Length: 378
Image 1 (cartoon, helix red, strand yellow):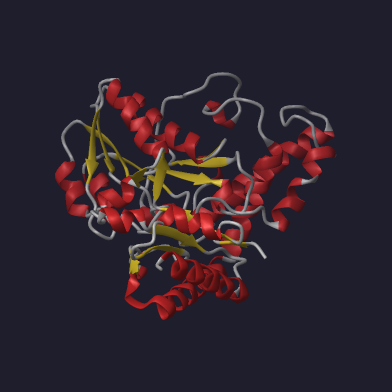
Image 2: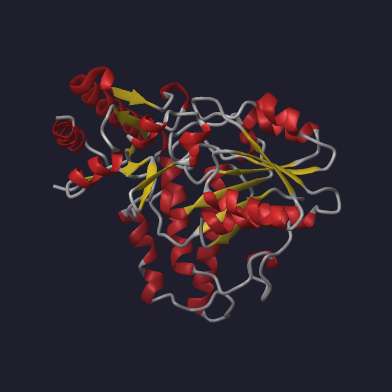
């Protein structure tokens, strides 16, 4: 019995999503720009998917641009906004716990003459709004802070930050790849100008994503070609995966409350099971009161995470909070930014539940993980 508990890394394609995609793999294969029936069908599918995605985040369909995934969306949002507004200034504010698709594009922009401020986080992984306000300068053109952290689940104060951004006439982008389908991602409530979605995080295929661009916001194109996606992201549309993403967003909105409760219940069951067996040897990095409902970042005292995951890896699939290269353990920048002690960080694993996680899977995982922890502690 294989037990998958790494849903923050990726999710399986939902059966409803797969069924939505199948006709576009064989029957309706026409290009959306054509005028014959199978092309018109593809075009209508893109229109419907845009409406489905807009419905999930409370946007207008015209504000949605389909991309190849979260990385492209983040790059387009940040680099596109920077290039479009460089005459106003070259200062960008972000956090020290962003995904590499944000930090790497910021690093690139730094090499091109932009000035990047990386805000600190507290020991729960949260940026404080007052730190954002203090970082704003007359030449600040963009703030990019993720909605929720992929490693520890920390939810950022996006509403507070958006008020600061508006007050200072600064564009605000958030990466909602991890939060969509788990918590509310309504763009009006969040108050953002740009928002990133990644399909494979919400039971759609890999290789598809979207970027919300608030009406009136201008960003520079990164690609040039035909007029697809309002000319912002040209190229023949990936109808198969767009259909899948649209359906996944419809399902995510429809089942949001149910899935949120189920994932939370399974997370608590996991944590209680593990603490029941190991007590205070379990060190929790996740703030359960302000985190994604499915995410646990925890360490087992004096148990190296990579060793643990290798021991259980044929049965239980979870992630570590560090990378191991040539016997050198590199601590996650997120845990480092949270000032987690090195030994604790090296012992940290991320366990993330999904909408299909069962009690039986959780209980079995607790037993397998606990047996491994006991053996490795001898």
